[in-house]
Length: 136
Image (cartoon, rainbow, N blue to C red; front, side):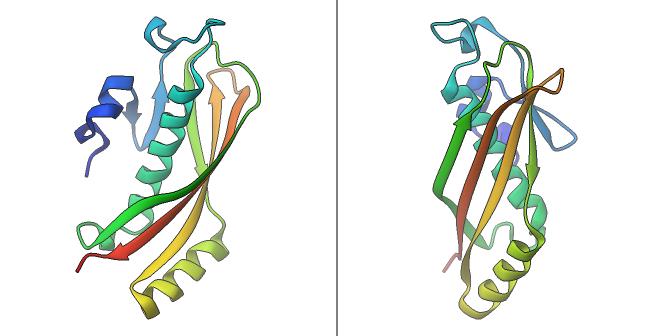
């Protein structure tokens, strides 16, 4: 699935460039202190984690149902410029996921996301745990 197929992602205005997602600083996304709203940052981070999950295991696309099971987020600094989401995942997590998924046809994996503004200032740290199960 392409992220552009998700109506809410389009509504928020998330843009994709070579698998990297971003949000422009836009009046429609601002909160009461004129910074990018926390929910918009959460949506950017969660969507980036899902896109990355898809790229980690392309062979599973269409064969599994990924569902977000847990999310942790910490807002570090106000976002008052365009923001970009960067992902990372522990290599041990990937191997653990593959092993468990092979045995049980279901497993979880944690994907971490940093959101930075265009100047490189860290605005948000997030962690998403995805539960993936084979479609029956």
